[in-house]
Length: 300
Image (cartoon, rainbow, N blue to C red; front, side, top):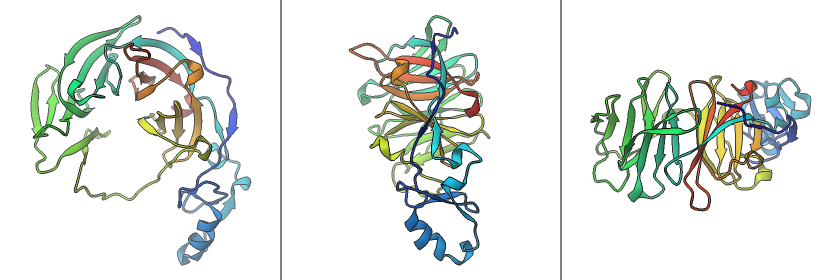
């Protein structure tokens, strides 16, 4: 893929740090033991009154200069190059996923009656469609063997977990009744994780929550991708921007996609060459697009 558009000049900009306890703006202190930022109210009424935390070292943000995560400044460059752009065959690339050999899976489900799942291959000049599946999908993921695991849309009476094998055979791999599964994910250990519509339980402790910088107003996360060093790339659909967080939920970078001519972005995935694919909705009746971009090395 040839480099076609160079991203904006590297710089930093001021962004307020949110309180990790209340999620409100204006955090000015950090507990080094808990590794969390706090506003004045949470520092005095919460952290300061707990016996086991009274001996913890608390520093002001102005005193912490060792890393980007500890600063009120974040990078404004995430994308360094736009390498190529491809036109797809559906109005919107609702979800993307990548596997080996430049294979990309595109899912369109804006209208429940028009679900389309596409397996394609990224070539130098175009996106070649290898297979189209008119399946009533709701969510999908890929396992270690690049087999597609998916659930049905909620209007279907039955919602077993199905698999599309490498030979295009479709079979049921799990029947979750009476649960209705709405989200699927395969982790690094090839274990299938799932979320359910009702009656679900959270067994893990909440690690963090992120609401975006207050100056943006409404924050609308629509898709995300995880980099090899466990940074989180968030697609902010409403502001047409990318946010990069570290594994602790601290904002590292924020970049608008408008100047790169990437508009109405809707989906993200990272391929095996560590390039970011950004799926977009078509403009003025056109079909969707996929932009292949290079992320700054500091985040990868």
